[in-house]
Image (tube, rainbow, N blue to C red; front, side, top):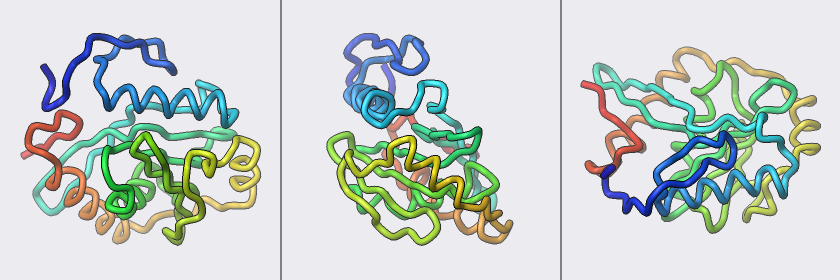
Length: 184
């Protein structure tokens, strides 16, 4: 048994074909992956799934999993973070994640609870669309990526963003959550 999740059996991962524990959260992740491919035009190969991210805040360290990194032309253009509950409470930590998973600012940040989504401008944090249909189709993300530069994140900014991720995603997680881990 893993954490506080009800295990319903096994499910085949839509993107990789791997066998995963079937939980309510995993069912939402599979729905999101299927939507990105079937409704938004990304290939399975362009969607990187279950990406580990290690962060630290002073002497405290932790690791979490970033659900989806969407690549276009071999560059990450969109991060998608799933979590149940309120979307607005996840905006800031997901923006911080978008500034840590690569050496540059990812232009599009998607926060979703599996039922709806908020799409944020990675640079400004401004809400640019709501709902799954607000998620950019592949052609639009490709055009956006062609116009964007890979502005590097300074080491000071990365340190501050890592603190935000640690506070929201690691320290603020449920003690029985097995999708994050505290490293002491």
